[in-house]
Image (cartoon, rainbow, N blue to C red; front, side, top):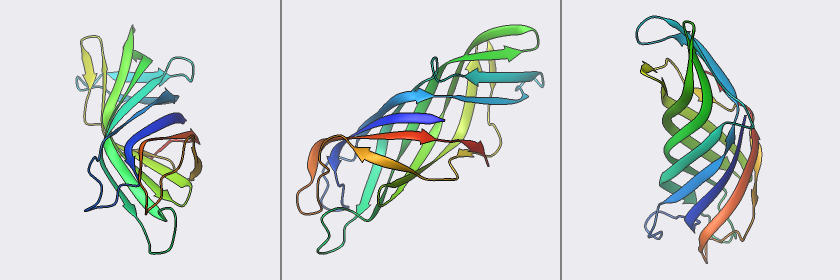
Length: 171
């Protein structure tokens, strides 16, 4: 599960109008993954809501504004993320765990889903790389603006929102 606070430098970010496609994500994440490491040794990695620190950067953002509507109907953000603070057990040895990868966040109205891809777990001298598939939230949750939101006619700088309760599942 992810609980994330998002900050977009400019929202909405309409292609051809927006001058800054960047932003930051921060929050907590809880999940567990298991499989075979790059050395073919079984591993498990666990992040809890109290120890899993989620951070990311927004590298791309686009919003669909329609004439006459105050806020975008749909949009997306994408970038890279890090989930740190986990426990990585490989064989009989325990290390701290970090999960890195890319994310794509989609919005339709206030509903948000996320997909995590290009996943790599690191811990100690061991790396479980190129994890198969992806992790996504099959059901959308609400994004709650904490200032604003900006409108299609008047984008707002340093727009912030909370996204809480994204349940993640391997896909």
